[in-house]
Length: 274
Image (tube, rainbow, N blue to C red):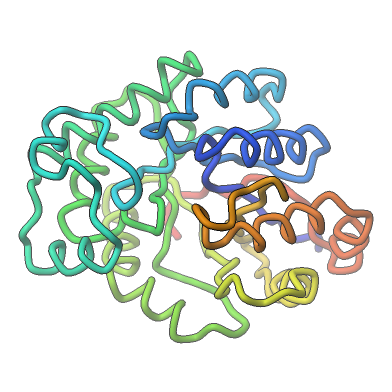
């Protein structure tokens, strides 16, 4: 039986060159979803690239609380610059977050998405998985409950390997498993499983992908990736080289051959009750 893989490119809108690379892959049918950073200076320039993709590629919000500056004045008063991920994780688990300001920030980022695209996002996830952290996950799910149409949420509570056990465990245990419980309790659509975790230092992205494809379960999986342009600034972006490697492979004939060999097709996998 052919298995389904939802391949989602994160960080669209971070820079224009990376956004152009992601849009080009989507045009070629190499992606089924794109997750968008809307609080950065390049979002408005990048957003028009989504229009020609039509309905075949889902657009989502990549809620960002760890890079750049807040979009809302409420959070900007608390944090003129967004904190690093370790600092945010610590504050979340100490219950020391400015919850009201975070609510305003989520609203501002999702409103920026709608203003630029003309629609609500099909799904929401978090840059560096911040959407699953204590306090933040409630902000996100409570906000989405006010939307008339269902918005899916990326499940980070069941990560597939192979490899990178510690990083996968860290994602699950900093909030992924708790988020999954809430998604099930509230009947919110989500991916059954998640894959794509690695350390960005591995230079053979094809070898990683072939292993991930072998492990896709019958119920399907969502694989998050970070393709980008080789024109990326390596000084400003520590994973610039990895972005270029990912894009080159996903644009290649080898990727299509690997999908066929693994009997995997690219398709959405949002489901209820998993």
